[in-house]
Image 1 (tube, helix red, strand yellow):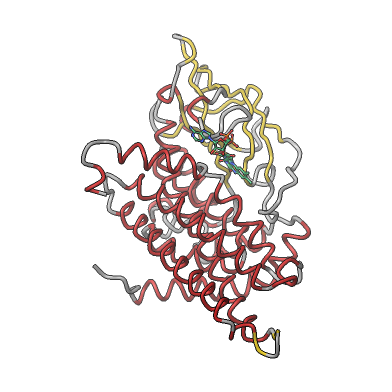
Image 2 (cartoon, rainbow, N blue to C red):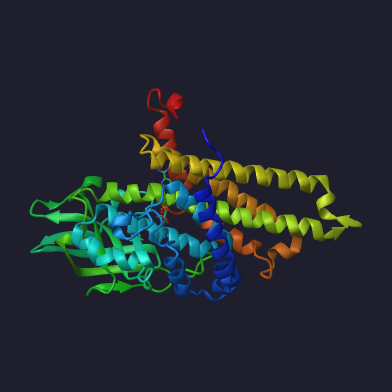
Length: 390
Ligand SMILES: Cc1cc2nc3c(=O)[nH]c(=O)nc-3n(C[C@H](O)[C@H](O)[C@H](O)COP(=O)(O)OP(=O)(O)OC[C@H]3O[C@@H](n4cnc5c(N)ncnc54)[C@H](O)[C@@H]3O)c2cc1C
């Protein structure tokens, strides 16, 4: 068992740290305040390969492992949580097209997505189907040469500003509407296709550097070659994407909590109360100690889950759910505690703590809520013998 990063991993980490410090951190507060989607910064990230970290090289990606990718995402999130979180969704959806797409779909979409010239959204959730995603109602009706998509997707990150949509929809064929998870197909859809419409930009608590919108599909034609995987495999593909997505989101929480702790260490050494720096109060040292311990535990859990996914471990999904649950809960608490240790200044926008709290809060909700993560873990544990193999 090796816990140290390799020289190569240290080099990726250093490149990402420098990029985040130069291109993300100085503008993160402005992007948040102005609700600005920083496409130019994302394109620069693409130049370094950050838009296609674990996409296979054959599809134009860097072909890194999930573990390597998590090291990069963590550093980027230290610079801007919300922008990095979008970048992770882009990486996930691109990986789905590169892995499950036909040659035609790969050629149409992957080069520009891998380089960051174009961006992609992941469209699973619907107004009436979030946690119970397999209950989705959007349809893909079989027609000559392809499918016609109809329905509405909700809460889609990047929607309205992205070029490609990975869409999960229910197959309707000669036998009628196909029920359950096995009736779902996945598609890569050009966001400018006729019949694609976008709702208003949602006003959100955090994640303000990326837009979130509903998407309506009205008889949108998708060629058969743009289906991902076989008919009926769409839900499985969507969940495979999310295994990695959950590691990514957890990593964004870890990077943000690291930034919050860095900021807090500085502040405890500077701020004075009762004639001494507040860092000399043992109560605050104990709080800081717990924050750092929880940070390291979160990071190691995320890296373990990434390792399991890289190895194709049979319980990788369970580990990804554990990592997402643990890291997003603990790291949200770290950011909130960091805010508390800054006193009133923590609540003021001049400091980044309140943004860290707002940005990490949603990580407990999306890509499967933390209740759903517990459901995945609990169900697995109740299978005979599972508690001893995990
Ligand atoms: C900012 C933002 C960005 C998003 N981006 C995307 C995106 O890009 N693509 C996409 O497809 N989706 C996206 N989502 C949607 C997100 O994944 C869903 O909001 C999430 O899965 C929860 O679904 P829901 O909102 O319908 O909540 P519901 O499913 O209605 O859940 C409501 C509450 O009930 C709990 N609950 C539900 N079922 C159970 C159960 N069986 N046991 C215990 N508790 C349960 C939930 O945990 C939650 O607390 C985004 C959401 C947000 C807020």
